[in-house]
Length: 307
Figure 1 (tube, rainbow, N blue to C red):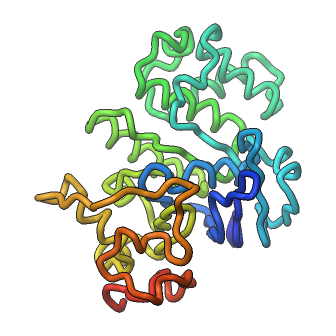
Figure 2 (cartoon, rainbow, N blue to C red):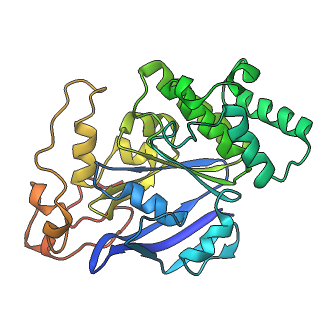
């Protein structure tokens, strides 16, 4: 059974729609990647799913079920946040309280959310959490302040604090963006191990297709607030059907000579009617003045290949 079933998410700012028609399912023990260029709506979609949108933005959906329970509106997400749904921001180190030691940061979650009242039990749980995210000396790390942590350490401390609440669904936003290659691989392996060991559902938000390929089972490709392509990651990455997906894959630096995709995601006020990718697409035709539906995993009137 899916832990999250989301149908037709819409995120709006006044009369302008930032994200529309986003549907996804998150399964226990599996990773779904939400990929696309900056400005595609990835982070906004994740914040809507945990009820943390900035002031001025509003979310609605046709249907949302979390861990078997229907969710009617954004306020109904608050009791689920932390315990069931957890969000790890891109700037995980910056999200830590600068005047609290690591141990106290984690203890606060254990005490207030996980209801671990005994100090000795909290200490044992804290050290186990820090070890689970890859620290070899949890006691030493517990004594540090956030400014004493590297970016990779801050990412792991934030993850340990998030896991202290025992969430079932984890949304991580660009967790490898500021890391070097060795740390990046370590973070990906750690997240995959947590997914399998804890049977978590993970939504992995990234513009890094190599990172998505290393960790995800499914992928949704987002462009200007709409899903361009979705499906099993090996199928989508080996045989992309949407021209945008093919362009992203062609621009990968880790696969030989990268081909830069012309143009950029249009600003909100300049999004075209119909297919939003048409100004950048060599295959565009008059039909693209209408918005294509997502059919067999691709929203395109002129898909590249059949799968």
